[in-house]
Length: 142
Image (tube, rainbow, N blue to C red; front, side, top):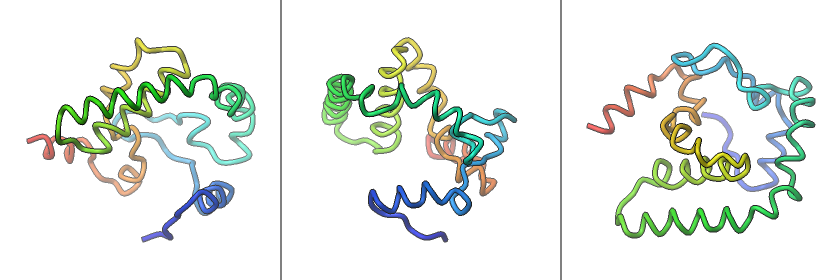
């Protein structure tokens, strides 16, 4: 098991240590054989992509969207309270991340499709271990 990374400063330090914590992946073996750039590229390969995306994801660009992010969070939490029981990752975290991306890109019409991709899109570690994430999801649903 690897070193546990906790807290803001440790996350920033790990992000700079790209040789230990590499982002270079080989893609989702059962879905694609290409990289999702710049997310799956280590420095210096990702630098030009990062420069292109920085205006979209900079604090200055995201600050005006904060009320929309907050409204999304309140809506999701309200739905979960009404539901009573829920799974944090599947029912809150992933819908929130996807919802925020839909807000950032002004693509609410893509939310349902992105959501249909399921949690395995976000689970690179399982693929690196050779786990069949889809089989685990199906067993969990039964």
